[in-house]
Image 1 (tube, rainbow, N blue to C red):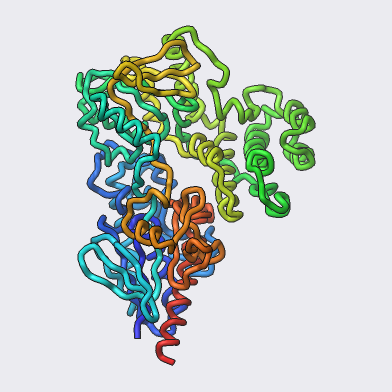
Image 2: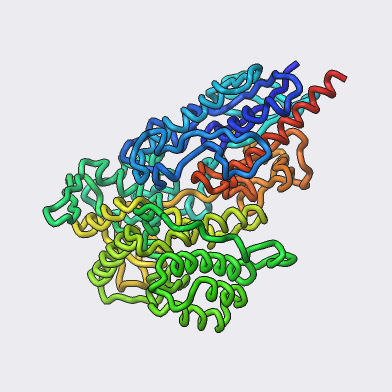
Length: 584
């Protein structure tokens, strides 16, 4: 007698689920017999996004010390804690190192096989290197149709594919049609490692829309990836030596600036005492408008984390003790004049005070007479960001980032998500390694990168792409347009054959592009909001799952582990009940 579970997706999310299922199996199964079927055309551990077969020039955007897929004592879950090495410990490297994507793939593969090889006796893991094409109800379970022609029957299925491909939006398709009809080039949204960059010509101007992490990957592949080299001058300045095969990147975005770089120093302060203000009780009854109802509480949490570190770690830059400030801060609302007055009294230097509007949109209402003026400003901006993010005198910034991570988890627990806040979080806390912004600065000095400004608009004009921004007068033309961003999740436009089949039959539904599940147990909901007894979904593409993507930082009680453990225990209990009913 054996229970059976299928996990569709073998990337970090699926790997975490397999580890938690194996860890909980001995306690929850009355008999030591369980078959776990892991289904993914890519090797387990890394999956598609973190597969080993991609350029070693692409780095992770987290330091090796901030990456783990093992539970630790901070994780509050019912299942057993099974510690393991962080990426830095696994490599035996500098904690501040930014490892390459292929190296991370090797680490994730080791995590997966360690979970398999240390599973309790009687737990068997079967890896199917193919796609899951469809699901069907059968007596007592689910039949999973595989791309290799086989069908497997299991008690329960968990969808854990992560972000998948989608068909173009109407606007993207219109741009692709214009490009095809005008002899232009258009590269839509997607992972840089998956794009056909060979079609991007060297030596020509190229318009790039987007300045986040996808842009950084494109920048690397189109410069260093084409033979360009970075060298350090005698004075320490980084200089780019072109190969002549790189395109001339003309780049802009909504903000007009890249994501802030990762902090380049170890954080030695106390963990900020958050969350404190963002609670279900403080929010009251929904529905909520995020900017009006939720953001003030989020901002107050972030400010609390920031000023706690500033006042306790750098007391000479404050006029109040933390105890005095904390009491007064708790009594004020974030947007009130009393809060602003308190911060002015407590923090004398303007540069030490939080200004979320300026932080979010540094180019807001700024205008330059020509591109050269914007270039000078951007070089200064990048230099200041690199200096600030490498100086522990600004450790309050790091504390605010820890506050952001805490808030992100709380919002996920409350089932709250907002596109603006997701972008703000990524811009502040999920930026590239500092060396990448230093390379961007060197590329701008070498004339390989030109900055276009904020609120970038692109249109087709005179058989060319034309880009302009209110930040500078005029505009630029090019024959190639690249969308440097990842596609937004969308169940309705998903190309995954399994998702498409379930969607077309009305057996799944979406909310804001995300797969709908019942929050309490992550059971799939169909179009009539009826939960399926044997189908579950988990990961960042699921409603309420944004905080469960990828991997986690050690020591932070990560939602990924807590939620994966809870789901593993639910599914194991369901599988046990199924087998008991079969025997009866």
